[in-house]
Length: 449
Image 1: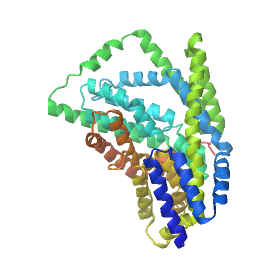
Image 2: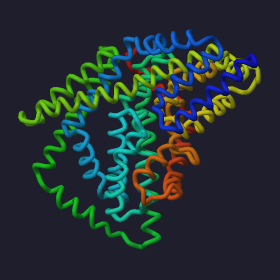
Image 3: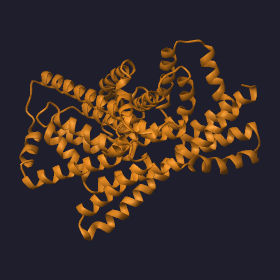
Image 4: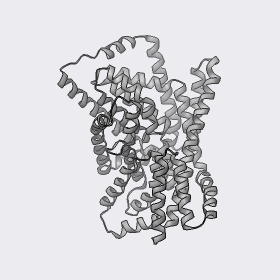
C-alpha cells in the first residue's frame, strides 16, 4: 500500500468510529467514511459517483429478495402468536428441569433472534421481560443477564438466518447450503447453552440449599387449562409447517431459497389469517408490513453502506495487501484460521453481526478458502464467531445493550453472567473445527444448490 492509501485508511477508520460515537446509523457511517476515503484517493466527483452507484449495485441482486420474504415470514409468525406458543411449549416441557424459566427464556430468545436476524435487537427487546421471569423463578440476575445476552446469538444459525443469507450474497456461496449448514451447529449451541444453564442453576441451589420454585409451580397450575394447552400445541404445529415449507423445500431440492422464502411467507400469511379475529386482521397485516419494511430498510442500508466501504478497501489496496500479508507469512492453515476468527472479536465492540459479516466476509473468505477449507463450513464458523464477539468482554455489544436496558444490573454483573456462555461457545467452536461434518452433513445430504 502507498503512503496516501495508508493515510486514507487511517482517516476512514477514525471517521467511522467518530460517526458511531455520535450515534450515526452504522450503515450511514460506513457509507460516509468510505466516501471520505474515495475523496482522498480520487476526487469529490468520484466519491459522489460511488455514493450514488455503489448502494444500487450492492442491493440490485435478485437473491436478496429472500431477505424481506424471510423477515415478513417471521413477523407474520410473531403476529399469529406462534412465537409465544413456542415459548409456552418450551416452558411446559422444560419446567421440571433445573432452571426451567431460564431454559424457556433461552428458547424465546432463539425464536425472536431467528425472526429479527439481529442479536442486539433481540437483547434490547427481551431483556426486561426475560429477566423478570428468571428472577421471579428464584434465580440470580447474573444468570438472567447471561441467558438473555447469549440467547440473542442463537438466531444467527437457526434458519431462516438473515446473517447467513447475507454471507452467501457477499461471498457468492450457496445460500441454500449455508441455511441448511446452520442447523447442526445451532442445535449443538442450544445444547451447550442448556447444559450451561442447568449446571449454573444446580450450583446456585447448592449454595442456597433451596430447591423451592414457587413461580414454576404456579405456572404448572395454569398449564392445566386444556384450551390453552391445545392452542399452544396447535401453534407449535404451525411452526413446524412453516419450517417445513421454507427450509424443508430447500433440503429436498424442490425450491430455490428465494422460492422457499416466498412459500414460507405465504404459509405464515395464511396462518395469520386463520388465527386472527376478522376485526383485528387488517390491523395485524398493517403492523406486520410496517415492521417488515423497517427491518428490511435497516438491513439494506447496512448493505449499501458496506458496499461503499468495501469499494474503498479495494480501491486503497487494503484488501489485497491483507491477503498477500497473510499468505506471505507462511503460517499453518489453522493458525491463519484462528487469527482470522480473532479479528472478529474486537469488531463486536462497535458492530452487530450483520455489519461485521458485510465488512469482514469479503476480506476473510478469500484468505481462508485459499488454504483449502470448505467454503460452507467456513461461512458457518465465521458467522458463529461474529455473533460470539457480541458477548465477549470487554467489547461485547450485547452486554452493553443488556445493562443499558436493565439499568439496575451493572456491566460487571452482566459480563460475569455471560462468561460461562462464552466458555460454552468456545467449546462449540472447537467441536465444529474438530468435527466439520456437524456443519456439512445436512447440506451434503440435501438437494440444495
